[in-house]
Length: 184
Picture 1 (tube, rainbow, N blue to C red):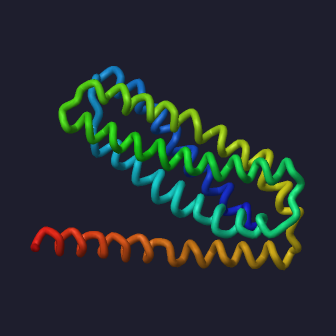
Picture 2: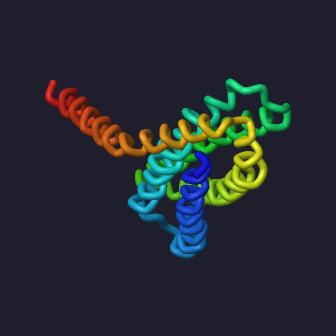
């Protein structure tokens, strides 16, 4: 398997969640309200799975190694676009979380912000995934030897093995800090 294989499999999982976000929009519009827990679930999925796990492997392994190669201008441009899109996604998810907080805090007009963020996210990810799957991943594998591809795939597997442990180590540290600052 090439190192893009696991990433493309992850794309299918991300697409399923994005379709749920897309399905939620008319439900939220019809209800005129949003469940903060639902938004938290969407945010957690995007931040943890799509960004830290999936984009983490892209940026820290695939893009890192591509950055060491002499890419044709088209591929370098697409890689830079993808990196900017990852940043855009992070920013949009932060805006969604902020809008949810405003809504839950009593600002009814923030529902429009929540809906706009959800719509933008649901519109963004399919295009981003298509760009990677159909225009970038496969041609970029030609820059690597078989042994380089094997090493990247192994590095991705190692990344995944340690991922859950890293997440919960960070969470326990955050709780400890929060409790320490509250007891002062």
